[in-house]
Structure formats: C-alpha cells, structure tokens
Image (cartoon, rainbow, N blue to C red; front, side, top):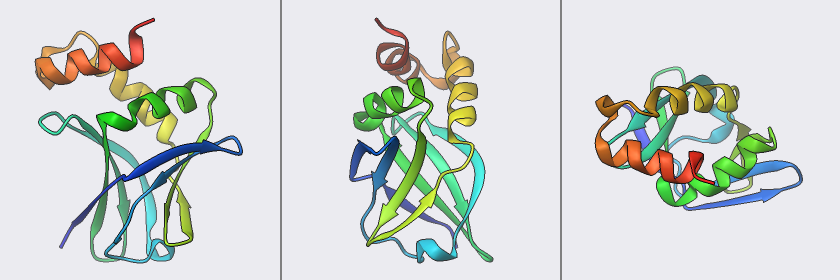
Length: 125
C-alpha cells in the first residue's frame, strides 16, 4: 500500500529548505529517499518519492510552496522533510527539480495550467 503526505509548511533556515508534514503514516526514520520526482498536473504539485521495505510514500509539494522551492533551488540549498521532530534529506531533489522544470517549460503535454504555473513561479522575472 502506498501513502501520500502533503507539505503543510515550508521554511528556509540554516541553508536548508524544511518541508513540514503532519501525520506521516510511516516513521521518517524508516524511509529511504528514492531520488526521483513526479508531477501531479491536476493537483499542481511536485511529488518526491520515499520508500520503505513494502511501500512508497509520496510527498506532495503544492504550488503554494513553489516560491520557497525556487529560492532554495537558486541557492543550491538541500531540501529536508520534517515531521514530529524527525527529518530526512530529500536527496537529489535539485537535480530532479531542474530536470522536471526543463521538461515542463513549453511542453503542453503536462497540461496548460501546470505549464503556465511553472512559468509564472520559476521562470518569470
């Protein structure tokens, strides 16, 4: 069984971007970064994948947190997921985000709304 968690809060602190979630169905100490991201075109979100021995945990990062992603990406800061005092680095996040951004830019296959949102947040002056 796979689970989803949605980022509730994001903050840049100490050279890192902290993504905070509540009610994680598996302890973060038991997850491993998959080093891969997906896009939820309908939900206007980036999705980072974590895994355990028997399931995936999808970390949903909605559009409202994209400005923080952009700022952290520009400074090459690491991205961390935190819940209940436990944290895990979302390894290779920057590389995955860069890949997705370049693929989405000017590509209607992701949907007009997602393409426009990515353009507005990540490529507008």
